Image 1 (cartoon, rainbow, N blue to C red):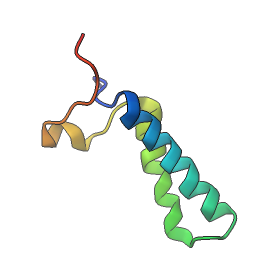
Image 2: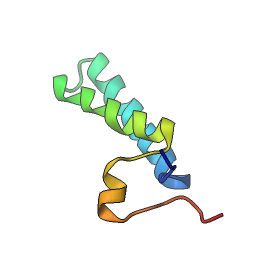
Image 3: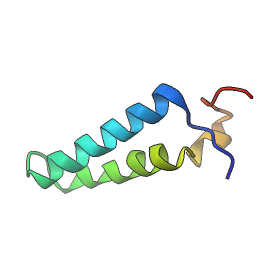
Image 4: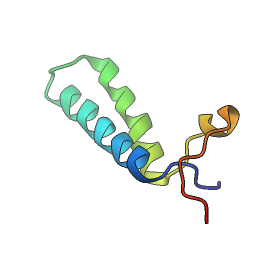
Length: 62
């Protein structure tokens, strides 16, 4: 897997993922909040499987 998530995109994914999971655990939002696992995982591994299909890459060119 080639990294395609970088910088601000990665930070936002992690923050949104953690926030959704935290809100679910505190019962502020319903079970759908577990969808936060997806942005959290893609932010942590720096790869989004949808990006290549859309031709997007937010990593800096080396």
